Image (tube, rainbow, N blue to C red; front, top):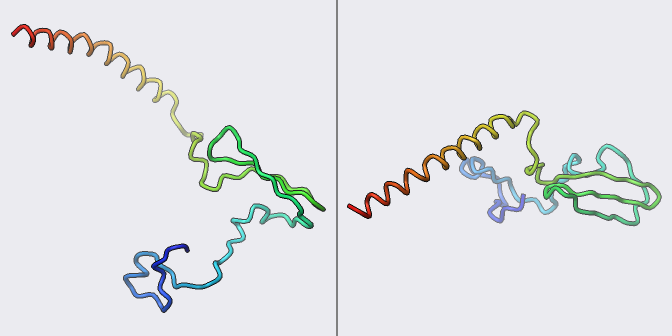
Length: 118
């Protein structure tokens, strides 16, 4: 929506293939992007936000006549592992790399020493 190349006329086939939508002065409002889209919140006088220990997540509170509090991740939870993440594969891979380094290190040192004496 913020692409400066958006055409002011009807889009051509090439512009549509690029995903460029025609220019319109008001930006469309997606109700699902509003934090309180599911609840009506009346008389808001203050909005406060605070960081969490996760980089992708913030806490947002609004208060006045009503109170509203939510956790939000505008860019998705990119710093959290999915439930299907295989921790066993991670441990096995890390151990295999550690063993490879411990076995490969002396072999490389021996080869470099032999090349230096040759």
